[in-house]
Length: 210
Image 1 (tube, rainbow, N blue to C red):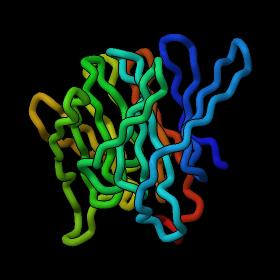
Image 2: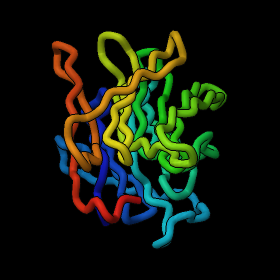
Image 3: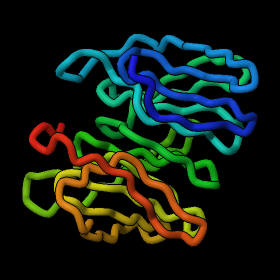
């Protein structure tokens, strides 16, 4: 149920999460073969049950697939050869989307409490950054993020106040920009070859933001 975020590894295999099931999937396009992997048992923190496997990305160092369980507060790795699954406790609550930079560092949005995590996958070591808030007690809700292909800076959105954050890793600081739309609710982001930041968004339904 609910095939979700899609990423493609170096061999051209298509990995995706099944947000309505406790599974991740792989498609080999040349043969049409699907493989579905059951995720380990985890405690659900969601109001509707389930942990909702969500964002994924491919490690550029070894082609392993990494995923987050949004309402399970887990981050997992799938071995590219054996398909063995290893899960870790997420350093942030509500790991939603994630991206690797070119050095193999995994960046994860902490949707539940307005955080950004830097994860070194070797040994699963992490550092967590608190995103700036603009009203006391109202934490940001970062959903999507991307790694700028030229600068390797981390771009992430904030759904509750229509802002876009740019994190500069070398300085460990945020720069914040207003988005010129109301109720943007950014779903994902990408970059043009010229380095422009592109957002896809869905503003429906504003009253039901998580």
